[in-house]
Image (cartoon, rainbow, N blue to C red; front, side, top):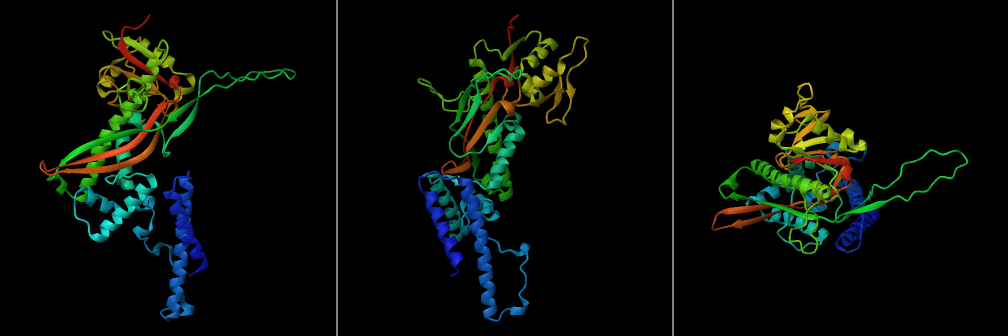
Length: 413
């Protein structure tokens, strides 16, 4: 055996041992190294096969054809690591057949189990019913959630496995000052807090009749993307707006991302929550007061979020002091219109009569600690099947000054 080939195989075995161990590793570096090793191994194998053909006189030595890049042999799914395997059409087809309860051949079953067993070993889970979703399906679910719920779509997201900790300013830092040449520069202590995104379990189940399971594979994939995407999307958007956060002593609610409204409500005197007189509706002066409450550094990226009915029944009817409508229809900016230069986006997570004015991408951060996986459970007597999408996600506010909430009530004078 080629000396270098031996070294490659030995290193791949070392990596497998590392992945199954308990020590901390850089997953991205490991994946990159594996890709390089597999590419090098392919080239060595191709050279060896060509040499063997020459020895067998199948190819004349003076007529060795130069391999074309587009004619590279297709990698066998069972030789891939799980992260590459779930990106293939073969695994996508196996996943759909498994989800629909169709019978897999012994070879298909071995392939399907190998990919999922390797993933479970990688994540140190003993849950045998957890099934990896193909990357294209998972991406479709996330995309559907973002298309339907722009508040979640606008959140800055990370995909760091496990816990994610970030520094955030406590708002007490002092700006730079001007000095003369002979003056000593003052030293100000920078204040920072820590934001810990440890992950919250998000799950949504849908129930399908056995008759409906007989749909074509492509139709089944589209159904899963639509149904799971819609249901997880509303939960994510609601969590960004009014998620309760982590329960404390005596609390009975489940852990969830901490929402913008939760943070603003907890502030002394709630300076970022304003009210309008419901009998008068939102007046022009009230709206300008809301815009004034956004910190100047966040104004350029600010967007108005509200339910569809609140947009068309309230915002669309605001007029200035001269009786001129302030609402401008504009679908080119990603919303349905604009007021005071700010885009307006409909989101069902915002309660009726409330308005969130926010620079979400700058003031809120989320982490997808674990990507979507799928569970399936059959109910024979009822002839029903449950499909449950599961992910671990967390989020929190970085800076409350990036948000203002306008709600109905008795405004303070």
